[in-house]
Image (cartoon, rainbow, N blue to C red; front, side, top):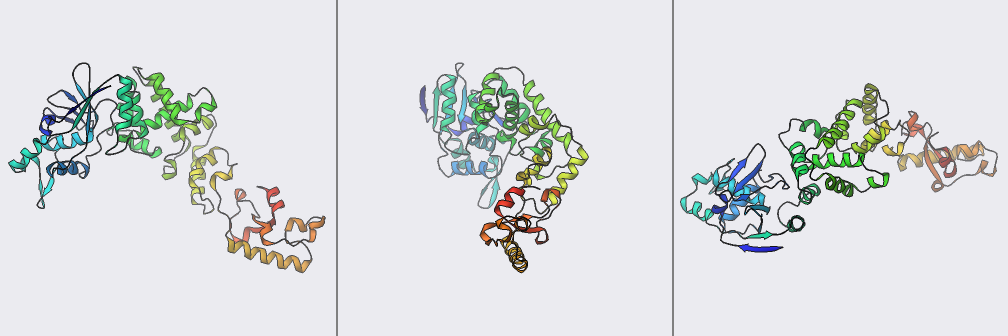
Amino acid sequence: MKTELHIDWTVGDVCKGFVFDKNENKGLFGLNGKLIIQAEYQRNYLYGDGKRDVAVVESLLAGYPIGLLYFVKNADGMYEVLDGQQRITSFARFVTMSWPFAIEIDGKPRYFNSLDANLQNKLLNTPLTIYVCEGTPDEIQKWFETINITGIPLSDQELRNAAYCGSFVTLAREQFSNSRNSNLPRWQTYIKGDPKRQAILETALDWVSYGKADEAGCREDKNARINKYLAEHRYDENIDELKNYFTAVMDWIESICDYTGSIMCGQPWGELYEKYHQHPYSKEAFTRRVEELIADDSVTNGRGIIEYVLGGETDTKLLNIRIFDERTKKAVYERQTAEAQAKGVSNCPLCAAGTDSNHTRIWKYKEMDADHVTAWSRGGSTDIRNCQMLCRMHNRAKGNK
């Protein structure tokens, strides 16, 4: 790969012909039409928060370096920003008054057109340090993964967008990374993360690659699954399979439950869909049971409620049912032991009911476990009235009975 250092281009040069598309939330062009600021694999603009964009301009006016910028030179002579699009978009927005923002000078807000002429010239004439590279697509994409050493670290999906840039990623980003998509509120009820950082797109790819995996073992490595799927579809001219699978999972979620609280967001919905979507559920009963379990103080892992109900309420480990505290266990142990000694039987009720040598054995506290008299799954509560101490052998044998 060939690289060339440029220190002759200034802020003003890069800002010539700058175009910012607020609808797509990205800077498009600069350098008098010769620079593509946001290539298809680049993430959306993230600095437009009134802090980071302001910091870029203030740094330039103060004479502070804003770091290296990296461009790629294409075969047609056009340049693409490889690293630095956030910083470029910020200062170009300020200079060209595209989606304008103000900086503060002497306690007063100033836009570019209200700066003193000397400050305007200082900003426009600030030289930038830019490396221009030429190479094969594979070399460029690999470099993109390694040079992101300043600013906001790239997410996994942003790196994938670079590694597998092509028609498929372009179409997928238009669908799942568009902050103006009217479906976002619905999607974000069930999916965690910022769509601008490719969270929705990554989830859609996670779901479809899980569902389309040839063997169960292939499902274990999420990154490998998604990479394989993107490699296979890189140059597809449509994303129908991706959209259809995503829609099927979303529709299934909403068909089984009306609850939309926080425990619904970030569930492994793709895996749950594959495991349970052919099972029938009553939406009304499912929703009611979820709400009951959320209100149950004994349930300490609310995240497990959905799969617990989907699986027919058999795996209580998913809920991490609250255990009896030490104070309760010791109080019950002392009561049971005193009563057992008075009767001449074991302080384990099940041993006392037997006829072997443990019928009269008094177990030490450390040799016993607390147990729900009536199992939690059968309505038993986790309080002293429903607590009994059993020897460990009988407690383990009792299970969920």
